[in-house]
Amino acid sequence: MSNKLIYESDRADWRASIVTIALVIANVLIFVVQSLKGNIADSGYMIACGADYWPLTLSGEYWRLFTSMFMHFSLQHLASNMISLIAMGMIVEHALGHGKYLLTYLVSGLAAGLVSCFYHRAVQAAVVSAGASGAIFGLTGAIAALAIFDRAGQYGIDKRRVPMAVLFSVLVGIESSVDTAAHIGGLAAGFLISFLILKISTSGRTEN
Image (cartoon, rainbow, N blue to C red):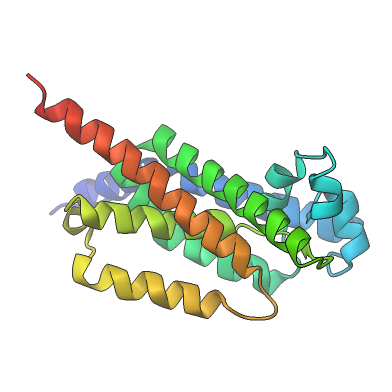
């Protein structure tokens, strides 16, 4: 294969992942700006910037469910999420297409924040939540849906390993320093919405 063909193939792969790239850039830019303006490790500062804090979110500041998806408490927090976003996002975006992928990502993130709010209100825990992990767990759910529809193999995924991968993701997320409720909420939302997307698209192809 010529260098020209290799270059064009790589360029096509990146174009197929343009939404994932845009999401990574948005997260990084927001992190840099917030880091320069204040202490991102300070909960009060993060709340002022738009982090998810149920006493405020559930009192009408629902926009926090969206803004908190693009905020991170540390460079390590950002890096781990962006690596996961690239790894899974490129697969899911290729499978669902740009628009449906973005819809899955955003709905997963919003659902993750909402589940987090209701859970922490129920246990009366004053938790300040931020990060892309809820939306990224939604991508894990999307990959599980792809496996159910026998679409996983097209994207290099061994569907026999998907249940274990999902279980591992949930178990890894069960730590005191992370928002487990958000992770589970995002996972469930991502699975459900991508399942519906795939179900509708599959039905559309079989109709005469």
